[in-house]
Every structure is written in C-alpha cells, then in structure tokens.
Figure (cartoon, one colour):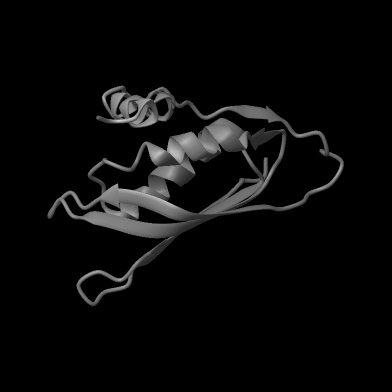
Length: 139
C-alpha cells in the first residue's frame, strides 16, 4: 500500500500547477525609474528560453540577452520571467523571437535604447544569433 505522502504526490500530478496558470495569465509590468537623473544600463541574461520551431515542431532553446537604458520606466522582473515562459509552447521563428520581444518591451518602457539578442543553441549544424536594436529618436 502507498504511503500517505506518495498518495499526496500522486494526487498533485492531476492538478494544474499554479505556475502554469501564472504563465498563462502573465502580463508585462513596469514601474517608474527612480534614478532618472542619469542614464544607466540594465542587463538581463535569460539562459532557459524555449520555444517551438513552427516548421518542424521541434523545441528550440536559446539564451536571451536583454539590455536597455531606461528613460521613465523599468520592467518588473517576475512579469518578464512569466512573459518569456509564454513562448515555451509557441511556434515562432528565431527572427521573430528577438523582434517581438523588443517591440513589446519598447512599447511598454519607451527606453532610450534597447537590444535583444537571441542566441539559439545549435540545431541541424546551424547556430543562429539574432540581434534586434532600438534607439530612441531625438525630438
């Protein structure tokens, strides 16, 4: 007979994890830059990015590098993590990954500058690195 702890663990497998709900409902969140008196750079490394090739259905793995110089807004990290996890089961081309993330973060934050680098793992003997950059136009 299974111990009470094993029964509890087996029962948990049949319940949709709270983390999945959080990923499904994720929205990017910003907060006000508290140091607007100077320009400074924020750098994120996201080594566990995954998505799906829309042609083959095979998983793709990448390290994302997100670098930006905030103006008025900064991105909240938990919301960024959950947002990036939404790509996990999504069919999307490598080029679209970097450009879509850049577009959505620029729309949210309106930074002075931002770059998204999607450094994909080798697949089929090809290594792909996509660099997408935004520089705020002077007004």
